[in-house]
Length: 160
Image (cartoon, rainbow, N blue to C red; front, side, top):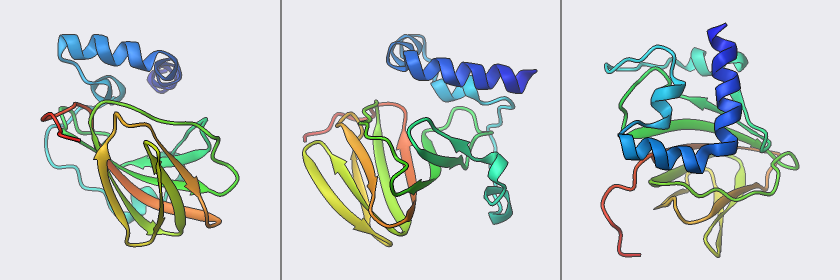
């Protein structure tokens, strides 16, 4: 039953995320704290075998899937994810959220648009940006795998 409640909550939160993030920030609670069923403040180790289990991946309605490396960690500063996106499956959409983000391409090629600039990225390429800037991924190769690590809070002011 708890799993179903979490899935319903995740679906709902997508619809009201901006307003919820603002309200939760006001009371000092992170969205990830609400989504994680068994909080842990210690070390989270993830073996390669764990993220090869497809049932542990989250398939989004945007057309890509991701694995949350630190789903059991509460009060984290970073959100580390492994993303897989297939060409032709990712729906056209833009993202914008509090914090900062780092992208590192593991395999494949993609275009990653931040603000008005589109970057062509291949395995080994990385990018760091303020995630309040609108951004989106466009797979170029059949499949692209990339790490995305982002913070939930704005951190220090930037001078962009």
